[in-house]
Length: 278
Image (cartoon, rainbow, N blue to C red; front, side, top):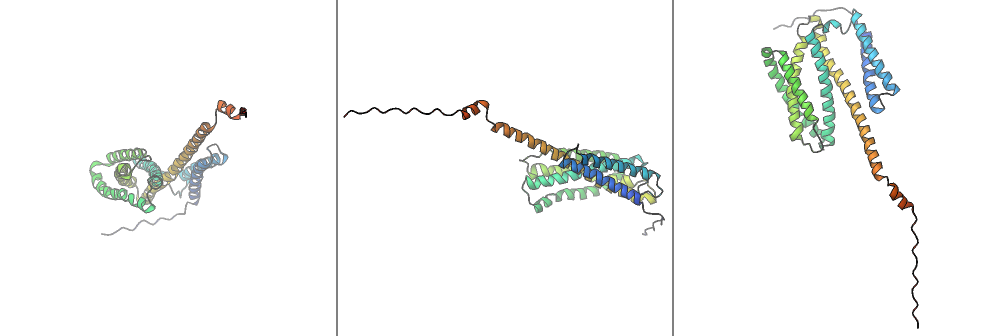
């Protein structure tokens, strides 16, 4: 068995496209993070998010006209491939947020140590490894659409299951079953999306098609985690203000009790003891 030598191509690095894409993503993610620390209407937040959108728009415009584009837009001409990138973007946002917040929950609420928390995720990885091998055998028979649909549905069920955690949740009663459902769904989706992304591409675009799938996962994870952290911080501040106002209301005395507290106590009249005649 021989591996054919790849075709040698001449060209230049797309420095302008690289700078525009990186700067746009940094500005966009920073805007979301700044909103968590301050507010959505703060000047830095608005300026950062606006700059990110403008830079990413300029990146797409430049790539559509450049002869040395690092991301030629012809790669998105296939609807199935473009859909695979979009699905991976959404999965990255959901998956990174799940790992981030569930790790905090398992350690902070359930009281697991760092080592025990890492071990608790091992069944999740094992199911994905075994499931990916099975899906690769089933995919040629049933096609990609049923696997993507069923896998996405299972991942959605797993995420909603994770959303039911509370202070009384245990690992085996909720966390482990939700992990297994989500792992099965991810094993069905990941293999299928990879095959769809690199199918029917030219030899010169094979590396780009595969790389964009990983980029979609990483970019989706960055944006999704920033958005979820912002929502969490905003909800925490709102709930904190509510609890403080409730405590202040319960500890504030009523007007009647205040008047009673401020009214000076009337001095007691000393009773004169009767004299005993001698």
